[in-house]
Amino acid sequence: MEDVASAEPLVLTDEAILERFHRTKNQPTGSQTLGFHIVSVCQADMTVEVEFDAKAELLLNPMKQIQGGYLCAMLDECMSVACMVASGMTCVAPTLEMKTSFFRPGTPGKLRGVGRVAKWGRQVAFTEGEIYGADGKLLAKATGTAIPTPFQNYKK
Figure 1 (cartoon, rainbow, N blue to C red):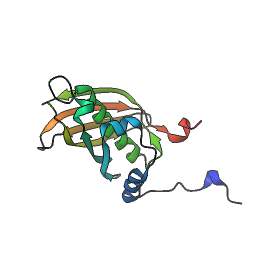
Figure 2 (spheres, helix red, strand yellow; figure 1 turned 30 degrees about the vertical axis):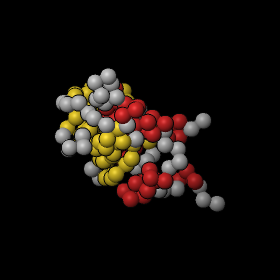
Figure 3 (cartoon, rainbow, N blue to C red; figure 1 turned 135 degrees about the vertical axis):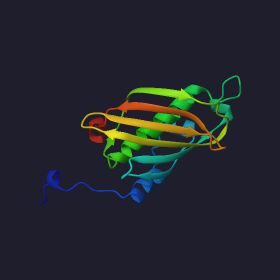
Figure 4 (cartoon, rainbow, N blue to C red; figure 1 turned 120 degrees about the vertical axis):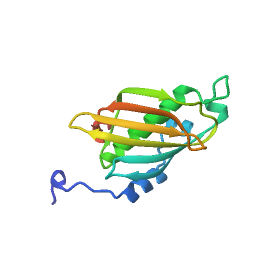
């Protein structure tokens, strides 16, 4: 009988990771609320591109703009998913801290997000993210620090 502990870990291709995201039946409710949809992944570059469907009935402030906290959540999602991809889908990466700069207001509709891991260390990952409006203009940018944690540490 083969020793499971010594088995080589399964290495997923970018296409397999993308397909896994598209087929999931367990999308977190926060991701659903933000209208999250992954567009592309690149493990070699430790990047992801995503779309958000920013719905007016859920995300707007009194000025009819996307509330900044939701833009922060979108940026956090981009950066966290980039960490998952960078780990080969073996880790989650809870955010330890995050700094966000807002450049212009966001309006309802399709937004594009980019997440990347700037540095993957032994215990900490440094991340970056941007959110772009439908017109392609930068809405907000963030940097963050996350702590990569193997998925099995979260299983109960």
